[in-house]
Image (cartoon, rainbow, N blue to C red):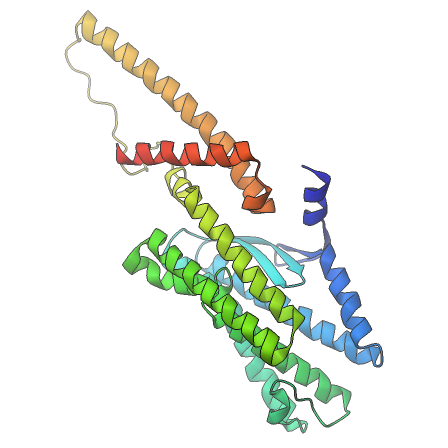
Length: 329
């Protein structure tokens, strides 16, 4: 791994909850320092804003982890970084587990809104202050904390309901189309919707909110959509489906050895030995292909498609064609 790759992946472990390791990406420290500088006139409020922001994002990611486990999947790591969080979950490669896992993140933000908004109004907060460019008139610290908490959770909820793949709304959109269109076409539609959503976010960020962070979100959506397009092009999802099983009595298409019958002729025994030798060589070759493919896929999950060398991209294309041939046989 290059020094740049190590730098991009560097993260600090900040704790563990419910068998889930929680990490903070190093860039999060830069954003934290920037937020405190923005609130330098009132550091207490700045700390409360950061607590509300990262607490909301952390609970959002915990919602994904809980959902993944509810549908029989696994979840063991959360990474917090400047544009939100990333819950590393492994659920079944089917529409409903994917949809449910994606939906539970925004559902947590909706629940937090249901709790925080009445408290904000009870303490004298004004709904009009939640509009873009408006702020509470009260100087009370509690009002300002609840204002930022409600505003941030509302923003997280709205962003994650947009069909902006790879955000949660885009994943939900793709999973909803999956049963009718199939995985590949539903992902193509989700990628197209992501480009349109990114354009809307960028226009809102520049002309309405004048928010640099929202502009970064638009760029992140475009980058994520390009990554998914590259994964489709190189057949990574097809390989996951094809390499997911093994030849065992519980695998589809498995057939046991035939019952013993009359002893075959010497010629048939010779042909059978040759066939088994060829199958053994082919199995070994496929095993080596799987091993190399696992290495490349692991690198893609760490650094994205842009981190692959030209040779690794060429290997993915060759492996994709090879596995399509295996499927068509």
